[in-house]
Every structure is written in structure tokens, then in C-alpha cells.
Image (cartoon, rainbow, N blue to C red; front, side, top):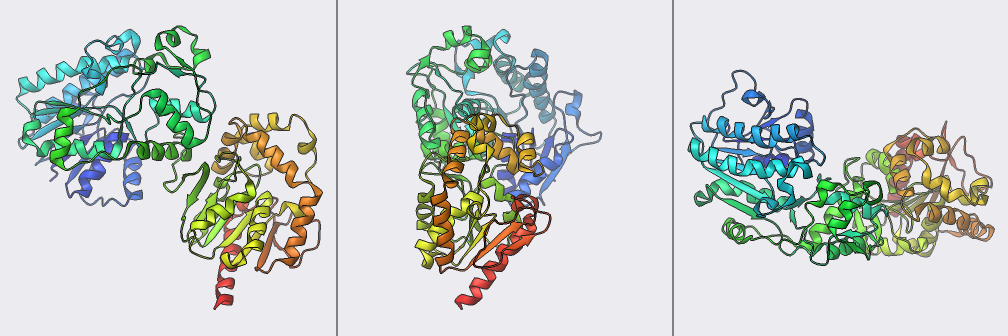
Length: 571
């Protein structure tokens, strides 16, 4: 017997509601589209949510009877949460209407037949409270118009059915998994495509933290006097849009546009020029919203809105980590003073530094094979990190590390690893150099071509994989995406040229012979060294210059062996 049901349970808001209800000890039915069951359960398991009290059922709110299985008749349902919606720009009117209007009314009909019903909680949007808005008209966008149309219909229908309905009107809910709406503007900012800020000095696009909104949502049925009411939930401390963009730009260390263009002008410009979705522009306004009723509910429920700027920065980290929804985000990834860092920041056993033209994602498969925590960094100016001095990153990064990790470098990344270990032997236990560029022949054509950076920036993930001689992977796709950002390809070529200068190569070779820290060198059998080294290199059969991409288990085994050997030596 379940006490709660969540419609739209596989969506961004629905799955969060399911997780929080289960964590609070509720028995929950997750009603979702057929084929999305594993997506929900995998997401819950990754977050350590106990599924013993969960029942999953296929559902389609746009279908008669909600598309529920024949004979589906749960008992004990007290609370119904309708998180099902079509939220996208450019929807056909009939598609938006089928879910956001007809489907929502059908959920009320189904709920009215539940003998133990306490409450129906429905989610719509904060712009519903605006008396006059362009969103009300279908010619300006079916999503917003369908939400405006459904609001009075739901109220009247619930009254006719005699059921308790509460409507939650959130602003832009941000958090891991949210990739639409404001996220599109952040993506343009990150990729250097946001030429101007739409709107004016007072434009207000409010946000609300996803965890806070979820807690607010499931608190509503516990407060009897919230029945029959609507609540606008948003963070009133959200900076006006120009300041919000500057906050994001400062965190991401990218250029913030200085120019603002009124929405009316943006709407008249060719979309190919602005990149702005006409429907998205209807959300960009100067309106302010009354949140006093929601604030009182939050006070009674013991909820506190988290710090605004911290919420925005954490979401930006997630967007960059997940490549704006292209891959699963890394919950440990984020910026520290413009440098991208991922992993265990205080007690890593391994610290890994990438080579070129890759970024920290190139270590993903190796890290998955290791049985100890690791810390990865994108070198300054490369990957996701802002420009800076490459050799300065490890002293800054390891300042907060309390262990003596094994430092691991690949190709160009071997340089900063070797320099740090030589200068601070007491801070590291060992060094592993993988395909060290300073021990191999100098790079040739790429460095001499004046169009090298242009070619690198335009490479697709597939082409880049072919050029590197490795299979396509998420790591290569990450590198290609970052090389496409302004300045990264040029800085990559410049770093290659600088590292290939004979004096720098000779400096590192001499350092290798003097260093006191244990050093192990790993190379691919198809990518041999050009000079003699103090210790014989370990060769990985059938590997080239990127053995950590092609043979991650073999590389991980060598790292683990070095860690074990140095641990024995220290004791």
C-alpha cells in the first residue's frame, strides 16, 4: 500500500520529489512514461535512495485513463503530486495542450476517485501570476500559453470535484539535471556566443534552488490551510539579469557581455543572428512577484532558502561538468579560482595531470579502475580552466592536500608534475610519467602551421579521435568541446610550442636525473622514448601516446603498484 503517487516521476522535478518522499519514509508510486523506468531507478540508486518502498508504473497523462495499466487500483493514496508537463520551447499547440491542460485535468479526475485522498499538488510556473503577459497567447509559444490556460480550469475542476488542490508556481528551478531555460543562456556565455544580454537594467529572471523547491512541494499536504491556494516560489535575492550574468561570468572566468538589448528589439532581429528562441524571450521581463504567502509556508515548514550566489555557482559547475546535459555530471567537479578540479580535494592517493590536447576527463576510465581517491585538474588556460601559469597550478592545488599522493602526468602534464615533485619531495610519495613529451621527439607540423589553432578548434570529436589514434570516447568528446571554446585551441598550440622549446626539454631531462622522489615511466609500445632514462620505462603492449585512453586498466595497475611500493618504502 502506497501513500503517495508522483506523476511525471522520471522528470527533473518528479524524480526529486520521489527521492525526498522515499527518504522521509513514504511509500511511493512513481508514474512515468513507459521506457523511463530504469532512468529513474538508476538515478535514485546513484544517490543511495532505498527503493524498498517504491512501486513504478507506466503512465501517459495525455492518454485516456492516464494510460495506466488495466486493473491498476492502488489503496491508501493520500497525496497526489502532478509533476508531469511538457516543458520545452517550440512545442506544437496540440502537444502542449494534451499534457499541460487535458492531462492535468485527467490527473484531477483520477485523484478524485481515491477514497483516502488528502491533497493534489500541481506544478505550474511563476509567470502565471502576471496579469498581462505575451505568454498567454499561443502564437508566442505553446508551453507558456498552455500553462496560463490550465490554471483557472484546474481550480474550477477541483472545486467541482470537491478535492483539495494546491498549486505551486516556481520560478526557474536550478540544480543538477536542469538544462533548459536559463541554462541555454549560460551555455552561450560559456561558449562565447552571448554577444549581448537581452532585456534592460531591471530585467528579473528569478531562480530557486531545486532542493529547496522539492522540500517546499512535499510540505504542502502537511499544512491543511494550504488547500485551495497557489504559491509563488522563487528566490527574491536573485540578482537582476545583467548582474546574474556577470556573477556567472566571474565564476566561469569568461567574458561577460557589456551590452544589453531590449527584448522587443531582440525579437525583431533574425534568430540566426541572435540565437534567441522567441518563446524564451517571453520570460525576460521586469516584473516582480509577491512571495509572502510562500515565505510563510516555508517558515512554518522550517525551510531556509540557501545562499543565492552559492546555488548559482554550484549549478554552473554542474552545467560545465555535464557539458550542459550531454553526459552525466561529476558531483565532485567545480571551479576553484577559475581552475577546474574534480575528485577528492583533501586526501587523494593520486593526483593526475592531463596532456594535450586533452583535459581532465581523459583520466575518467583510469580513475574508475583505481580503488583509492584521486584528484584531477584541468591545466590553466586549457580544458575548462581559465588562463594562468601552468606550473603554478600544483602548488596551489596541493596546498589543501593532507596526504602524500602519487603525482601522475601525461605528455605535457609531466612537466608540472616533475617540477613540483623536485621542489617539494616531502609532499609526494612518488611520480608516474606517462608518455612524457620531453623524452620523445619534438612535435612537428602542428607547431609550424599558422592555422594549427583554427584546425584544432574546428575538429569534431570523431575527427579528433582519429587524429589521436584512439577510439571515440566521452573523454575525447570533452576535449573537442573545450577546444571549440574561444582561446582554448590557441592556448593549446601555444603550450605545445613552449613545451617543445629545447631549453625546457633539456631542463626536464636534467631534472629527471636529479630528482630524489621515486619515478616510474610508462609508455606505449608504439610510442617509444627518444632518449635513455635513469630507469627502464614500462611498456604497454599495443598502446600509443595515449595509453590511459586505450588501456586504462593497465595504466591503473601501474599507478596502484607505485602507490603500494612507495607505501612499503615509507614504512
